[in-house]
Image (cartoon, one colour):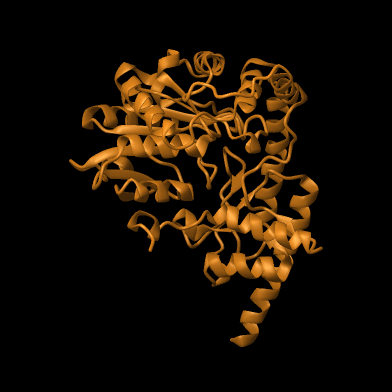
Length: 392
């Protein structure tokens, strides 16, 4: 009955966990949710007002397939201002969320049997997009701190290599690639003529003294091989507004637009005008959010490492912790399932990110919720460990 292309596609595990946890909450259960990567902040008031203004002024009709010129220009200005990247509006496309941009890139660039280097751990949807494009995943294990290096990438390059997926900072690990390694990876891409899909959706969520560097900013050659993808979802707490964007080679962007014209058509007109305000307006809310996440990051990292049997590398970016739970002696799927059912804490099993020794926790929630959730995890792990010792 079903087409071959969808038979092996798995549903989003992060959204499935989040959905189940929210259903338990509706049933009256006191669940602590560390599942989906969604800021707990509200969309800033100036952005909401821009959307209201768009409705009142009847900006509610079809827009150009690839986005309104005002938003494309706002993206171009942002990329110039923050990333030292020069793109014309014909090199930019607006899509229905960051995930949609990534999907369009995969469909526009990849052919059957093309090889895509995918660093592990990886965001789960990358893998499914590669499958849908009928390309071949070449898994590329990162170092002990989840960092990608040029040497690691070089070992995976073949004559069939078509693309490298670069997610920096990383979801799920929070790792940030060292600047010198980004430069070396750029040289590899140019020398071996493969494309780079640079997912920069967490670029603002880097803590400490590190600073985000877009690989596309390192020269004309690598810029031509790179498609930069991002969205307003995380940075401006606009996950439900569904506005993403991509910038890159004009031919690739045009192909993405052609694909979009036969799938979703234009992104929501009202949300586009809200995104214009998000990118052009005051950025104070972003700084406030990053400051709050930094505090939560440090708190979660410290508490996780205080739990016997769990160890966690300090995340440097994004808003996730990716602790190692292998000493507990059960798979990440069993760990996450039992933790939700027995302790009412939702985490995502690491197997969906390519590592069964880990689970992912989002700290995009309040310190109070983080403290409650980690207290429950510690109590549950201690009980689990005691039960195993009694069996022995």
